[in-house]
Length: 195
Image (cartoon, rainbow, N blue to C red; front, side, top):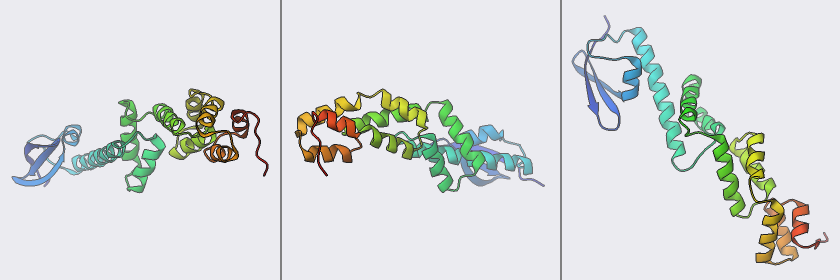
């Protein structure tokens, strides 16, 4: 005979204590209780237990993904990788990511635009920005849109040359920061380094 839910006690932080046959069983997220359809008097039969297990995995995936978003925005692919590394099942992972996208917490276009602006402000050229966005898991089209929205690379390079000076050291520095050779040459006013 299946155990019966005899009490549901609300606890802090969105948790519910579930009692089975009069004894405390476990704390579960409120959303999992609701989505499973648990109520006092309901038997925790095999099907209900399966549904609850699926909801617990989904809630865990959602919580893990939300924690990963606390320090900074991340792309869907970056979150998917983190959840995969944490051993989250595919179905729970996909449902969590779809939920986060639906409510706007995961938005690759926003991630691309913000990251591209941040890198441009830190004196990176388009090639370095493109590489970083690809590494973050942003689709190529979104990366290109984010780069296109920035101040042109040549103008950014000119501003940096004005601050640092038009010499070989600045040319090497700009190249190391991912600026295109033609942007560097243009910014230096035709100065070309030999070797």
